[in-house]
Amino acid sequence: MTKLSSCFACDIKAFLEFRLGLGYSNYSFEFYLNKFDEYCCSVNHETRELPQDLVMGWLNKAMENGEKGLPCRGRAIRTFAKYLNSEGVSVYVAPVKYFETKSSFVPYILSTIELTAFFEATDTLPKRNIVDAFGTTVAPVIFRMMYTCGLRPSEVRKLTCKDVNSDTGEILVSNNKTRKERVVVMSDDMIRLCKEYEQKREDFFVRSIFYFPCIDGTAYENQQLNGLFKNCWKHANPNVPKAKLPIVRPYDLRHCFASAVLQKWLDEGRDLLAMIPYLRTYMGHEHIEDTVYYIHILPERLVNSPGVNWELMDSIMPEVSVWED
Image (cartoon, rainbow, N blue to C red; front, side, top):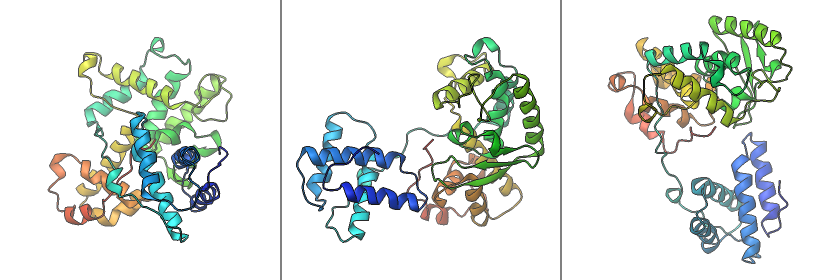
């Protein structure tokens, strides 16, 4: 953590430690509260009170300077204000409507045909298209694992060899945004694929603690994984001009997993409201609203299904945060 110097230094440190103790990640909160601390010093604010002019002054300055991340910046100061208020400090809690903006990006749910073509493309990806020499070996497994296990890109990138047990089929997921471990179980087909991959990995002489390493043994960076995914997507659609190719991201495989599970439950006549907690636990969502979100992106043919109580679902979806990596 950057050294804090304002009158809020002790409060910010205590607040971040409090969140960590509850199992939350402080990745963005720490960054923006450090910025707020710097701002307080620059305007010579000297009391623990958090007035409206101080909060809005900081946010307005960021907007005037063209800085990005206003929603994250707003959530950080709003949550910090709530914490101070619980400590008996006089604060201004900015309305959530000032900061909560809906993402304009709509998840792309691949059809069965598109998924088949994509995974076939990962199996036949030309080596000339890949910067990393081990990428063609990683691609068929890492993307199938994301889809069949519903993993986030950051979770699958940071898996270590100790985290994946191809004998029991268990994957320990610990590197996630909620800082809470969970165990997911692979299908029999995925287990067989992992065993084959592990042998190829051994034959390739890749030495690394990471389960899906680059040739130099380091973990995949987000940009590298995105590049590998885009190469596979283009290879799966060789006759589609780049300008007309749908925009798809690695994270969409996780969206596809959730949609596939929900569709299966609907086909089985299950009550989605009763089943949502199971999906929430498996996917590692911090809030149930994040899981309920997936019901709202189900294919149109399922909108009128009796298995979805839309009125109740809408009532528990005030804010959704499924976009973080």
